[in-house]
Structure formats: structure tokens, C-alpha cells
Length: 397
Ligand SMILES: Cc1ncc(COP(=O)(O)O)c(C=O)c1O
Image (tube, rainbow, N blue to C red; front, side, top):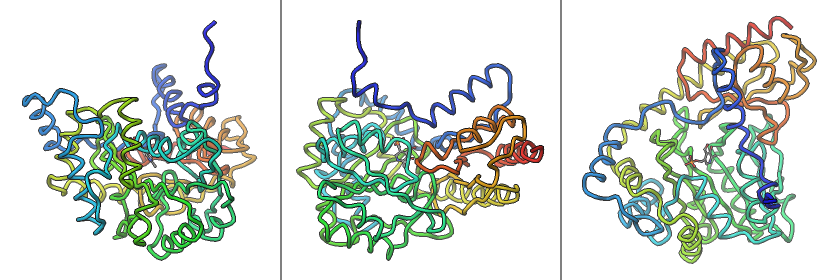
């Protein structure tokens, strides 16, 4: 009999995709579901980006490119870091991959050996612990609290570091909490990193989706010694509504970028040539579309927080970036509005889906019990209807 390997059987399917699949199943049976499970901008990819892809196809850019990405795109990403953050990056430090998730996997595969510990502040993005485990690394989860704005403190980081610690996986703005750090808060973390000699994998995929005038801080810029021990990951998926094009990148010290590129060359070869041309147009073209989408997300953030905080038993902190509301539901424990008892985040989300026809993701999937995540990458009408369905359902219990 063909057996599933030990590695494959240890990997969980993505919880967000599982929630979306159940919602689709109900929808197929004729139930209208308000789906807030997926972290995907609902805007179309900007037209000038699509046009660049059409031009690339017409020009015959339909063949293999260099495995690490086209020189044009690697050069443009390097230049972007200079222009946006004053960070000096050479094209050799840039590896273009099939989405930021692939970049994270390459980074972990390139820098983590079996038994190495990787510190992950919780709540964390669903894929981090499985990605670490896939490389043989050991995820070390360090809780943060709603009271501290879901930010890792330097004290908590220091306390979690052991002789086996190799890396801190940092994500700001955060999925699922939307937490953002001030420059001073990141500098305090950077001091611990430099004092202890660990490295950092900084997932900055939501860097352009910040609210209330906040400016992004690129972690590697905070000290001249940080670029030598930091891998920065980002991409076009969220900023330019390009989730399906699958282009992400990493910026790493040259030797590591080369090693990661070797892994990619054996595993997937180059990312799609046409998508690379589109990503080049996205980051070098007009940037007005980014601000237009960001402004809409900010309005939706305000709407969703106002509506959720008006529901008795729900407490929704205001996210500073990304497009998720991560709200506390402990005030609902013990209730059974539609007959199903709410006793934790999974039972809340199951009941919300079956009884209120609202699809959310339980906090437990992000390593944080007592919360649920609502993605507001959807229309105002959907948000208003979804939260009002939740409120009507909860008022019965
Ligand atoms: C924190 C975080 N990192 C990485 C990714 C992956 O991005 P991509 O679609 O480019 O692989 C996501 C997508 O949801 C994310 O939320």
C-alpha cells in the first residue's frame, strides 16, 4: 500500500481554506453565506498590470526565465527598497518566488536546520508553524495579549530565547490582528536580536496597508547590522490585488539568497514569466491604485469595528493595518443562541456558520483561543448584512 509520509501526515490543511470550503458546501446547497474567511482583496487587479501581462505574452515572454526571477524584476525590487526605505539592496539579494508564502518556505528551508527553534509571536498567521515544521525546525509560540495590542515585547522575546533559537518570525502589520509596531518598539526588539545573535524573518506583506497615516517600517533598516541577519519577505498579492498571479519576493544576504535560489531552482524553477512582467508593471507603474484601495480598506475597518463593538459580548480592538478584525468572543461563552452552545472559538465559528450563515475563522487556528477573525476584504453591504445576521442570531441566546 502506498503510505503517506511522516512529513505529509504531520501537516494540517490551512484552517482558512477549510472554513471557506465548508461555506462553499453550504452555498452549493442553496444557503446564502456571508463569507469573511479569506484574506484576499476583492478589487480587480489594476488594468495597467493586466495590460503588461498581455504585452508580455504578445512579445513571447512565455519561456523559462532565470530561476531566481528576471533581472528586470529583481532589479526593480532592489530599487524599491532603496526608494521606499533608504535600504541598499542589490539584485543578487532578491529572490522572486511563487507568492510570499513560497518566499517564506524558501527562507526557512534556506536558514533553518532540523532542531532549530523559530520564535513565532501569537496570534500568528496560520501557515507559519507548519512551514517551520516542514523544514524540521521547532516552532516556539510566544503569546501576546489584546491588552498589549498583540505586540511582542522585548522582555517576552528575551525570555523565549534558548541556545537552540535560530530565528524570530515577525509579521507586521499582522495577519490576523492587524497589529503594527512603532519604530521605537521595533528598535527595542532589534536590540534583543542583535544582543543575542538570532536572525529575523520579517514578513512585511501588508506593508502598504496601514491606517490613520502610519508609515511602514522595514525591520532591516533599524541598524546597520540587521541586513546581515534579516530576511525580508513581501510581494504584490495584497498591495496590488494580485493574489492569483503568485509573485512574492525575499531580500536576504547574498550567500543565503543564492542558497534559497538553488532550492527554488530544483523545486519549482522560475515563477511564471507573465506574472513577473505584471509584477514589474505593478511596482514600477503608477501607485495611485494602492492608495485608493488602502483608503477603502480603512473605511471598511471603521465600519466593521463600529458594528462589531455594538454587539453585546463582542470586543473588537481597532486594527492598525492589514484587512482583518480579530475580535474577542469570551463574553459569549455559555450562550446557545440557536441551540448550539458556544464554549470556544471553534464552537462559536461553527454555530455562526450553521445558524447565522456567517463564515469566520476561529482564533484557535491562529494560536489564540477566545477570538475570531473577520476579513473585511469585502463590500460594505456584505459587512453590514453579515454583522447584522450575527447580532440577530446572538440576540436569541
Ligand atoms: C501574513 C501573510 N504572509 C504571507 C501571505 C502569503 O501571501 P502570498 O499570497 O503572496 O503567498 C499571506 C496571505 O494570506 C499572509 O497573510
